Amino acid sequence: MTVPQRHSWQPPVGEKLVARAPVSFATGAADRVKGRRWFRDPERRDIQGELAGWPTGPVYRLRSRAGLVVKTVLGVTFLLGVLALAVVADGNVPSGSGPAGSGGSGSLGRSEDPENEERDFPVLWAAPGTIARTLPWELDPARRPDTDVTHLVLTDRRLLVLGGLQDPRDPWEEILWETDLSTVATVGRRPFSVGGRDFRITFTDGSWCRLTSLEGESLVRGLATALGSEVR
Image (cartoon, rainbow, N blue to C red; front, side):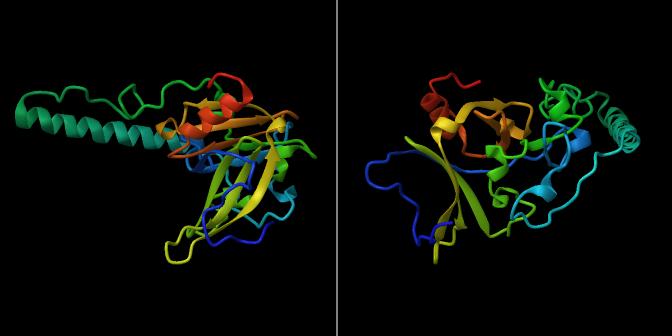
């Protein structure tokens, strides 16, 4: 870990800054995994207790199907009641109405990877000794203080994670993690996510991470360009 800098980090002379954006590990959006995330090995075991230096974090379980069925039934019943009142009041059913997730604007659509987006939601997929296992715990919003932020930074040589405090009165940040671009294999969007903000970075050893960012478009495009590939 480097000594914190009291200003925005800049690469050394001779290295070019390409893009940066605030990032965190993603969070599940489908009903059974909503608000949850897991850290897995290729056998789908939970490995968060094996990650060196990581503080204890929340232990999540899948939402039960029974609870989701009850919630859906109650939601539909409530909606039907509202529609009935609308009919009585106006004599018309509001256009475009329907339960959430039935194809309206609030629907996530169809997942291309239900095993990792609906039935489970790993944000770290890493066998022992792989690159993704070295990512910093500060990327997990459930572990870091609310006042701290993490940025993913792309230069023409490296991919870095910076952590710090974005207080205009006393800002600082430090390098938490870095890897050469040669260790990155692919980057791709994960459209089955809130606002389509998630993306996945896969390393050359097969390990990967799923991140999310409100401002990550330039980062994803820049990384794809550096890898000589199309954004998927």
